Image (cartoon, rainbow, N blue to C red; front, top):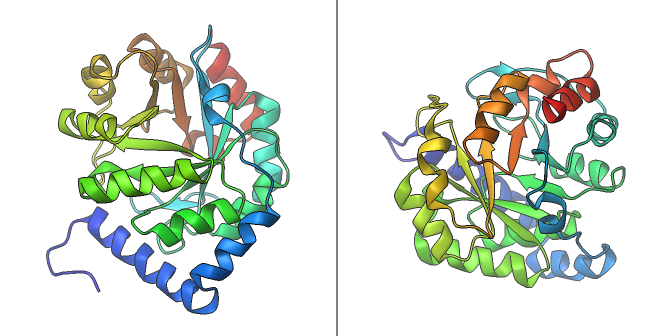
Length: 264
């Protein structure tokens, strides 16, 4: 249950943990661990997202959000992901949270079976079970949100993901969270312009924190991307990768939109 007065992030994490606990009743931890032997080894996302001459795009399969509500039905996530890959996406992010984002692990599994680039499980992960089931579903990357985790849990979950061969997108929203992410071993560090406690946006947050992310760590700018100019803004501020969701799922031609972001 969510405590009275909890912020939106706390509510989302609590719901995700409740849903994971329900799945665990049907599919115990030991069963999920056995399924790890049935999935292909993960792709190394660092190789796909490493800095280059052009900005990389992490393209998102996203039906809805708490701030926007329903955005797109996305009846065939795998087909959309294939369009993203055709448009030049370096990796695919799949929302698997079901309550507010209307996603599922089945979405991730279908996407993974269709594309040849790394796939990120984007969810509110706070329990080792969620990390293991992400790998069993084929995830190459998992998201860990610093604001949602005490430091020991962040370190534990980051280490578990790497032990399973995955990479971790560590998401920060402040200078302190960037430091905590780096201390946990982050090799891919994202700065989200959206404050997950109230879902407000600060388009300049990435630029104010980018210098705190050392060379050798992939810098990811998240949220507030609608046009090629927004991508250029983040690129000029030091982003190696830009995560884009809403602008792609609501557009008429996701592949062409994505290509314009990369070329712009």
